[in-house]
Image (cartoon, rainbow, N blue to C red; front, side):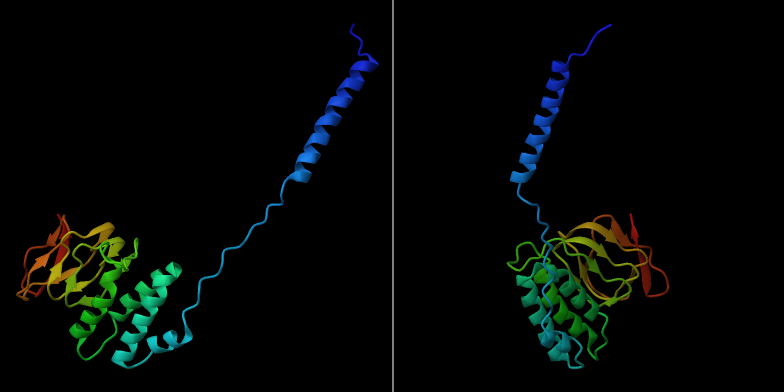
Length: 202
């Protein structure tokens, strides 16, 4: 039968004590971990927010310009700015095609990689809108959704890239004498008596 001597017990106690002491010294010298919360998004200037609700055509466009300039310097606001421009596509003005043309002029610089104001990774949501002209040539976006969209005029998706296209339920007007170029894999269905046909995946 083996016997544990007092010297062995003292050696074990000494080893454990030394390990604990070393751990405490290490913790004492270790700098405290401070979790710094991320800064809240920079608010949109109040005067810009007010003008975005104006009933005047030019005032709203000027507000969108100011918002985009603000978002150029505040990337956390870019998604909101794009969403605001997209929402304006559904606002009904007397000359809707001209209104949408103004909106495209403000949106496209943020979707084309060659532009100095390009904002990568923006999603597009044109669901259930009537679009009178679409020119997304060379754009690069995240998801591009046109579910339930009505394409009433010319369309050009040449060279556009997206993480995902969604044309579920999209309709194309067939009695418009215009040129249309769709993303690869999509085309209008067979013409029917009514002027609208569904855009389908090939």
